[in-house]
Length: 369
Ligand SMILES: Nc1ncnc2c1ncn2[C@@H]1O[C@H](COP(=O)(O)OP(=O)(O)O)[C@@H](O)[C@H]1O
Ligand SMILES: [Mg+2]
Image (cartoon, rainbow, N blue to C red; front, side, top):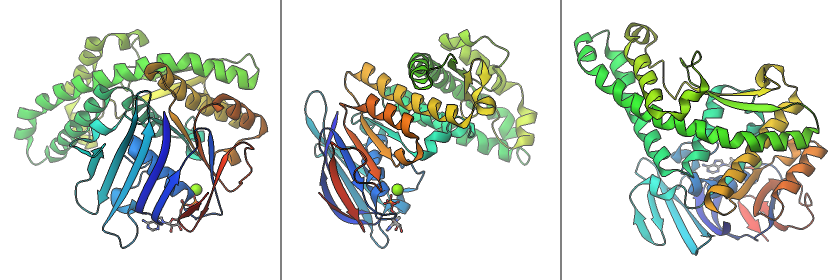
C-alpha cells in the first residue's frame, strides 16, 4: 500500500497543501509547531476515521474555516484510488471514494491501511487499559469490517444501557422491564469483539516474542493475553468459543444490577477489558524496566504491521510521529531495519535522520519538497 499524494485544505494550521510522497522513506521536517504532526494526523484520519490525538472534528478544522477537506491518493495491490473526507462544524462528515459518495464510515475504514506510531504508544505498557483497548480497536478495525460494526453497535447499546442505569433511581420500573433486553444485546456484541481481540493477540504474540528477543538479545520472554473484566477465574481457552464468552458476559450483565445502579454505569463488558503484557510471567506494567517497556511497545507496533501484511497481502503505510527522538540508538537501528523497504512517513525536527529519504520541509503549515 502506497500513499501517493495528499491534498488538504483548512486542516488545523494547514490552509492549503498538496504533497506527494515517495514509495520509500519520507521525512516531514521543520521546527516545532509548524504543522508536521498536523499533516500526519490528516493522513491517518482518512485511514481510520478519527484523530490519533483524540481530537474532535471541530478541533481539526482551521480556526475560522467552516469545513476542512482531506484527500488521499493511494495505490493498493490492485489500483490507484482516492478517498476524500470533508469534516464540518456541527454537521455530518462527507466521504467519497473515487468520487462516489459513501454513506458509512465503516465503508471507508480498512481500504487504505496504516500503522501509526507516536511517542504516546511508548507508554502503552504502563498506561491505563484505554490505550491498549484503543490499540486493538484501531488495528483490528482495519482488518475486519465485522469488528467495526460490532464496536459501533456496542458503543450505541452501552450508551443506552448506561442511561437506563442512571435513570434507575427515578424510574425503577422502566429499568426492570428493559434492562435485560439491552444486557443481552450488549453481551452478544461483546462476545464478537472479545473473541476477535483475543484471536488478534494470539497472532501478535509470536511476532512480539520474536522482535522483543531480537532487540534485547536476552532470555526473557514476553507474552500477551486478553483479560476480560470478570473473566479472571476462567481459562483463557474460553475465548476460542464465542458462545461461551457470550454466556459469561450475559451472566455478568444480568446478575449485578444493584451494583451497577450504585456505580451509575455498566461494570462489565469489552469497555472494561484489558490486555495483559508480561515478561517471564511478571506483569510488564509493574516489573519491567523502562527500556523493556519501550522494546515491548515497539515490538507490538511492528507486530501490527506484520499482521496487516500477512492478512491483506500488502504492507500498510507506516506513519511515525517523532518517535526516533524518543528511542535510543539500538532501538532506532532496529526499527529502521524492520521497516526498510516499506513506505514510511516520518515527522522529525532533524532533516537528515535517515540518509536515503525524500525530505519535505514544513514551515507555518506549508510544505516544500
Ligand atoms: N484547528 C486549528 N486551526 C489552526 N491552527 C491550529 C489548529 N489546531 C492546531 N493548530 C496549530 O498547529 C500548530 C501545531 O502543529 P503541529 O503539527 O502539532 O506541530 P509540529 O510541527 O511540532 O508537529 C500550532 O501552532 C497550533 O496552534
Ligand atoms: Mg509534532
